[in-house]
Amino acid sequence: MPTPPTPPAPAVPTDARSRLWRFAASEQAGAAWRGCLGAMLITLGGLGAGSTRIQDPVLESLHLSWLRFGHGLVLSSVLLWTGVAVMLAAWLGLGRRVINGTVTEYTLIATTGFWLAPLLASVPVFSRDTYSYLAQGALLRDGFDPYQVGPVFNPNPLLDDVSPIWSATTAPYGPAFILVAKLVTILVGDNVVVGTMLLRLCMLPGLAMLIWAAPRVARRVGGTAPAALFLAVLNPLVIIHLMGGVHNEMLMVGLVIAGIALTLERRHLAGITLVALAAAVKATAVIALPFLVWVWMRRLRGQRGYPAARAFTTAAAISTLIVVAVFAVLSSLAGVGLGWLTALLAGNVKIINWLTVPTAAANLIHAVGGVFAPVNFYAVLHITRITGIVVIALVLPLLWWRSRRDDRTAVAGIAWAMLIVVLFVPAALPWYYTWPLAVAATLVRSPAAIAAIAAASTWIMVIFKPDGSHGMYSWLHVIAATACALFAWYRLSRALESPAPAA
Image: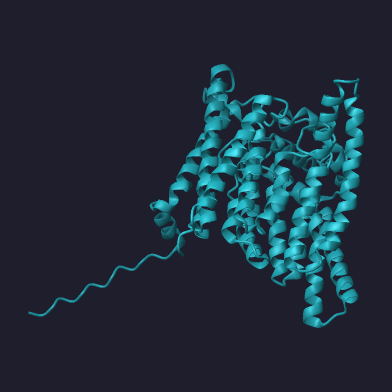
């Protein structure tokens, strides 16, 4: 009796969708689903406890306005903070697997999508900046110069939700972002809800560039790709603050890391152009440019045999021309000048919290010195902030000069320079710390460093409140944030004690 032919084995699907379905059904997706649950709770809790609108006709039409007051606000707050706790726990669980080498890059990238999806429908959380973005875009749309006047000069429904501290402040953002905000308001008019959703979608390219570039930079400078993704992409400080809070740092950071990646891969013109675009979103990105000149200079010396002086002059001159050209084109398209540079410091001096050394020092001097004699807080604050600017002016050139040796030292110099700026500027907000975080994440190769950065990120993440205010003057909030940070450090430090499994 003849043996029946063996049926051909079914083809194994290899497309991205099938791979994602297989991942979702596997044990590897546990953290993805837990973080997704956390994001859903944040989205639900944000309806009442987030950075909600002053008057919200959407909630009123759904008969959900009660979520914003009394017991409803308590319920919303519990849901939101539970979501944050669930996401942090899922993140730290992934961190242990990163340290032990038991997680793949694909798992980390796919998990990002699971965590992000629910937040795309969320109201802004932990910040009201998106309302300012929309109002500034409407200024340009309606024929005003946002670098000359604040949103208060253009009364419209968007102005109602802008924080009073920013309503008369001129825009501190570059022409690239002002053009994005203008385009959003052209498309949606004065619809705050749709405008917020669309503006958040405009941040997605920044996240995509970060996912693409962070592992590439890490491989070039001796870091590890999983650690870069864990710290720079999946970090709740990025997912919740930058995406959930809708901050233009997401675009800036993505462009900077992508620019660094291209520059390290010898595509210098494209790399410098991306960093120039990042600076046209937010000026901080310009810090990276002088360090990338060292990278380009070494390539010119190695490939073309240029003398050091000629290589440096060539790289610096072309980089400067690229920056000038990018700003000239974007400023021309927006019909604005460079007035946003003067608004950078004007906006920062209005913020008073403990997230920078000058402001923290002024608070401590006022608190301790006030016990013995009257202390004028604002006079002390003025002195400490000037001192901080002097520190930045002295340290940054030294860092730049010491970063000329190789690619790793150049990238490390960018990370340290951004950290110095964030620590010593007159004032900072939690999402400012994503500037050095994204660069430093590509350099990390020590489990202890991963644990330390995760602990710091946790503290900065938790110290702010969902409505955009901070808890640094509440001892209970500070103690809670510190406890969370210590737990994060302990959780990842324990992973160091577990032997790494065989590859």
